[in-house]
Image (cartoon, rainbow, N blue to C red; front, side):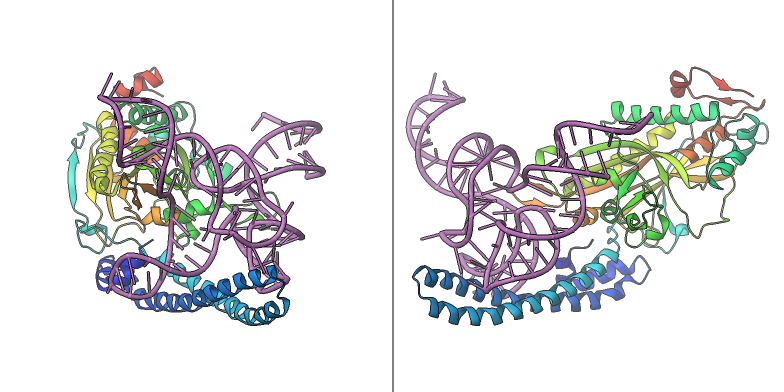
Length: 433
RNA sequence: GGAGAGAUGGCUGAGUGGCCUAAAGCGCAGGUUUGCUAAACCUGUGAAGGAGCAAUCCUUCCGAGGGUUCGAAUCCCUCUCUCUCCGCCA
């Protein structure tokens, strides 16, 4: 959430930055400021009355002690009237504050100055290219064909169990998926200095609000109901990404500066309703309702936010380098960035069977946008209380990594070669039919 | 699911209607003393919001939300969470 003081003091700057996203959010600022001004005006009124009431109440206490009952009673009458006014004003303050906060919760983050201006994915600049497109002496198959011939994923039975968009990994497919998870966790723990955490997969509403998923994107989540009790709906959700619980680990805390930077890595399945996306690439493993992901989260001092973002991207790229995959790193332009992010790099991996790049990682610095929402702060050596930058990045998303891996390393005979770094986990050099 | 106990500052913990402006201790920061360290002593030590050019002042916060009262950490109601025991259970 944006700092209301910044909006108040530099409304033109805020409007200008919001406008670069191209979603019209800047039009909300005037109304937001009107609510904010009204709130402060009411606050002054009610606080003045409260000061008066506190003063008189104290005097009543003294008079009672001196047994001057009549004088005390006279003041009580006076104070009772003040009390009525206060409760009316307090209600008004609470109302206008709620409206103001609703505006703040629905406004996206301001893009960082270094982010390219643009309207859509077509305007995203390519930052780096990793590896080269593999050349095949034969026509590379799609992962769907490979999964069927090598019996890695049973698409029909996955759909039978849970509907379309759910996968049943079988035999070497299941083992490859598990090996990838283990490999990714080990890499980030031992090579990149992250601490592993394993969060709940069903998470409270506050986690969703904290990272900016809610209230704006509530329709994309799976809500959980306890038994038959409909009253429990709206409390718990299947996590759309481990970012949601892990970034919230220190919600409502003030961390000592010495504890920063915090670096967590977590595996979790991710559940996405993908409402409105039906029919778009629904075949295969590229857009599914449940996929595995290893997520990286950092909580850092603001002055380190952008250095840490570069390192985060490098950590995710390392995965693709070690697996021998071709990829490109792009910088999302202002019009294509996520709600909470100030700057985002996406990593897209080449899937030769698809003839296209697939997004397998999105690394963002959300600056203090999420920290404000979840009230996470740190205390500096000078005893200043500040909001840290919170960063998140996929390291990486699995179903698409699985696709790129088997499509890239498929052989002319229909088998798939296992990259050296995965062989210790799988104990085989290739998957054959 | 049943029964009971509890939730107070960074931590321990006192506080049953009015100097609570939350005791005391620990911790932490600064200072004095000291050859260094330690110890002792002194001082200070929460958060949020708001008014003001500023010094400074005001309001709110004792798990959350309501209520009673001139006045609530304290009394009443609801909820959440934690702990103990019982039942069920991977």
